[in-house]
Length: 413
Ligand SMILES: Cc1cc2nc3c(=O)[nH]c(=O)nc-3n(C[C@H](O)[C@H](O)[C@H](O)COP(=O)(O)OP(=O)(O)OC[C@H]3O[C@@H](n4cnc5c(N)ncnc54)[C@H](O)[C@@H]3O)c2cc1C
Image (cartoon, rainbow, N blue to C red; front, top):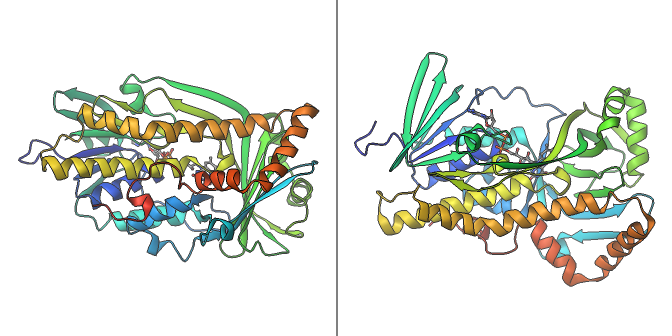
């Protein structure tokens, strides 16, 4: 333990995408950070055609750039130049174009592995950062001005003391449980079938969101002329779909998507994820903040969960930075006032995105014809109303509302 009586300023539990990027942001802000992760972060495995990817909003790109990570990512990031929204079997189509929004790209598609690799390579040279992994969280205890985490490693137990605890340990967060914070879970009875494909016609930066009553189908432009597919299917159909041979699966996917990219010429390996909306009842607890899937886990239809989490990371780091600028290094970064401020700043964005994503799923899953006609008309009207479309585009790009410094393209002060 250091002379300050703390092993670190911030203690992050969970080193997935969100915990690790938060560790980068904290390290940039010169916060002594300890991250505890159950897996060995070095075990990334080999890159492959089939790697899963994430759609990063324009605002997220700025955050990663502000953290100094974008340079390592840019050559693998595929720009999304347009989003084409339609509904299967109905008239009405809408397009959001980067050129109309005055941005070079609406967002970028990037493989999770590339992002993870860049973050961990960067963290390995950070003097404010320590990783304890593979390790399991055993117990958390509190006193007036500190939080203590007891963890078990291959060679015994260790206790780490910090001022702020961050739960970045995923949707089934054990930190959330230890904080006695309840969660709400709505299962969608759907699974996301995820794979990468190649097509006869190059995507040219086009993303497609195709709604159908039994689940949306999203195609995202990916590097090396690939297209990433996230196909939402009803639970009862999953077994059959996953066991189809490649040709039968390709024919079904082709039928569901149509021929906007010509024939599907290569079909990658499929993986599947059960879908649910999980929301923590509180964003903050005793000396603690919940981020990423531990705070809110969403249906991937709108590709928003990680983007929201990046804004959480940017806001939390910014207000801690401000606190230290005014109070000095002894500032209590886990104090209740600071946490209440974070809670207030993040409430609206998190709620709005969670509600929007949920509404999309519900709206497009009704089979009744009046609703279907309204939906189709809505899509057409939406295309003719530049104001409404521009607003949605700004939300989708992560550029709406009060933005933290990093999302405005500024470095941390
Ligand atoms: C199919 C699919 C497509 C998606 N597409 C998009 C998209 O396009 N855009 C977007 O913004 N989002 C997308 N998302 C969401 C995005 O993947 C998640 O928001 C993000 O991965 C959440 O990361 P996390 O770090 O919060 O959680 P996790 O990835 O669950 O990481 C939690 C980490 O905590 C560790 N851990 C857990 N318990 C402990 C413990 N007790 N001790 C130590 N360590 C522990 C785990 O090992 C893990 O590494 C998608 C999700 C899915 C399923």
